[in-house]
Image 1: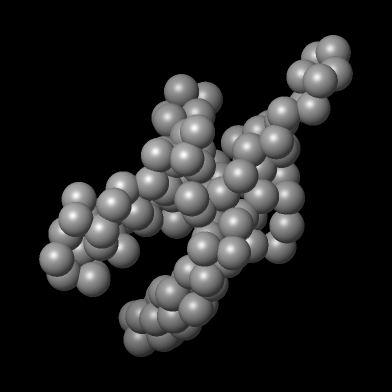
Image 2: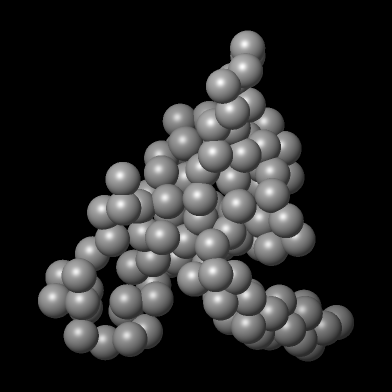
Length: 111
């Protein structure tokens, strides 16, 4: 099910490529919440915030297709599904750290 885009299909600009992969509010929050480790769908829904089940499912599928996370389904009743960042997904940690630092600095500048 690996449907990653080829380099030819991605934008020429590296910044635009990054935004194509994580330029959505929900994707960034999903990354933030999966950095500490594996989570189940329900845990992600609670931690990400006010996201609908439909949107969260769509975002997780897109991130799986991009190779940022893996989805593991356990053959149980009811089925258990877990999401884990891949090495590619984990490599985005410095970007999220920089966003956090910038956000903290911005908030501090408002006081």
